[in-house]
Amino acid sequence: MAEVKPAEVSAILRQQLSGFKSEAELEEVGTVLQVGDGIARIYGLSKVQSGELIEFETGLQGIVLNLEEDNVGAVLLGARTGISEGSSVKLARMYFWSGVSSRLCSERLPGMVNGLSGSRSLALASRSSRGMRRIGSVTLMRNGSGG
Image 1 (cartoon, one colour):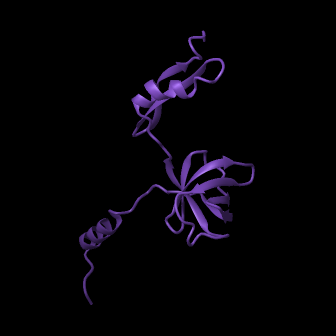
Image 2 (spheres, rainbow, N blue to C red; image 1 turned 90 degrees about the vertical axis):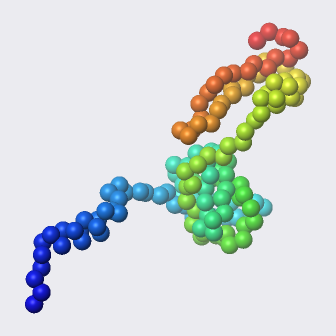
Image 3 (cartoon, rainbow, N blue to C red; image 1 turned 135 degrees about the vertical axis):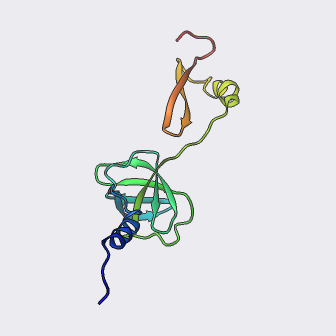
């Protein structure tokens, strides 16, 4: 019979355990209730926020826009091929972001809201690796009226 050497067993165990992750990762998974016209109604995503990206089991992504008590509504970002009632959906842990140029804020935006009465305030934000942070505010006023 072969002799078992404790040093060899320890080395094998260390090698096998070196890739082990001690942190548990939980995913919130929902189920498609209804899909049609580029919109999916989903049950089970209780911690999702508006604007958050979700991913269907086919790999297609969507943007959550409508939060209701028992389900959420999401816009599909592509063809609904393979997505039907009962399909699984999970959080992508990302938010939809659409950048706005400084030219739009300084030249175009005031002109677009010129017809609104009163003053309107628009918060500007920049995206960083940690999310969004506020960097300033632009106040839009109607034809020189006070704020």
